[in-house]
Amino acid sequence: MAPNADQVRLRHRLNGIQGEVDEDEHNNDAAEHSVVRTVKELRDTEVAIEGVIYDIAEFDHPGGGNIFLFGGNDVTVQYRMIHPHHVSNRHLEKMKRVGKLSTYKSQYKFDTEFERDMKKEVFKIVRRGKEFGTKGYLSRAFAYIGLLFYCQYLWATQGASWTMALFFGVSQALIGLNVQHDANHGAASRKPWVNDILGFGADLIGGNKWTWMEQHWTHHAYTNHQDMDPDSFSAEPLMAFNDYPLKHPKRQYWMKFQALYFLPLLSFYWLSSVFNVQIIDLRQRGAQSVGISLENAFIVKRRKYAIAIRLAYIYLNIVRPIQLAVTGVTNTSVAMTVVKILAMGAAESLTLSCLFALSHNFEHVDRDPTKDHRASGDPVCWFKSQVETSSTYGSYISAWLTGGLNHQIEHHLFPRMSSAWYPVIAPTVRAVCKKHNVEYVYYPWIAQNFISTIKYMHLAGTGENWYQPLEGNL
Image (cartoon, rainbow, N blue to C red; front, side, top):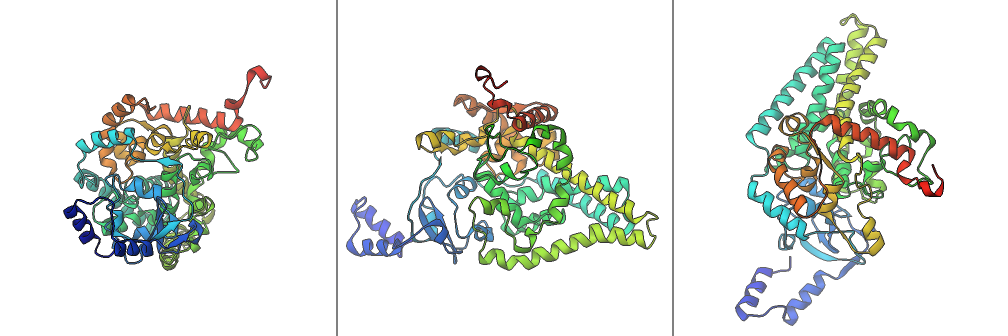
């Protein structure tokens, strides 16, 4: 913000002047915007929002220090999605403006009629400052944390068993769904330190909070965008979530059968996460591949902590059960212990990844939300794209078990709102979508969403949606 900006605005009001700035003020403003850079030239303590460059090195962010995770990037979409109440730029004035981007053009637009109407109706239900975790949510979260610690204790002291593999795997998944997810969205509590601590739940289940945020926030900003959503191509070349054209180079022959091996492949999610080398440099390759810069001081300083926590996780959950088998404590062979460890990982993987996969992969989903932008050059409504690339199933019970992930539409519209509120606002969200002719996909039962996902995976794998019968392609 310009020096003495408050006094300047007050003087303008007293003089009845709008837009007239004296020469000194003009020079100050010009100096403040003298830097012109491309996105790639941004420093690691700078971010760009709607073409303006801000230095956040000394910014005391009310939401905590995670703002520095995306230092060195254009965070326009991320800023708008996380701050639904910031409808003007007055909040941006709290940061130091240092320049502007040499070029800026957005694929998405905000503050549309649909967005304004949606916010108006939803905020009648969830008032500002009340959108964080409720007492019910926190009770549920700490119950899941208690279950995880109990299972962790038994796993590390009594060794692996089939029963414990199932319970321990599911308990870890419950942390991923209900605890770390809200926390790393800044939604568990209005206190940043609470979110920071609960966010480490990602590390307690074999993941990492910082790489998760790198990928997941990018996914939220560009949901189902074929070039910008890291989740959309995270399983390639083994299988495709994107419904590519028939002769697209990313199509592989074996993808025709992906509906059959879809679930078995997802069962290896835990294994691929635990032994992912990205923990070494904390640069999530999916987010990095779409242009997110991940080489800033905030990330570099946290690498040693991420590695230490991962080594502790590997010891407690893989090395320790094998030690107990070797010493005869568990009366189980080493080979069988390894199988049970993999079973635990599969239980976590399927509980987690199946629910994530349902969210944006189903029949008639919008897999190309910026198609109209490419055709006309006009930005598309971000709020509308979030609705039509997501689905919702079930209600309160499903929400309690999945941490609100069954309400993906509500979650993608209001990612910094606690999952406890999604079943409450869902009827209103549905009504506003109907009013504006925005397609809201709802499945009363999870089984219906699951069947639709399997059908979609088959169609995406075979490319049947692209067949033209009149041209003889069938």
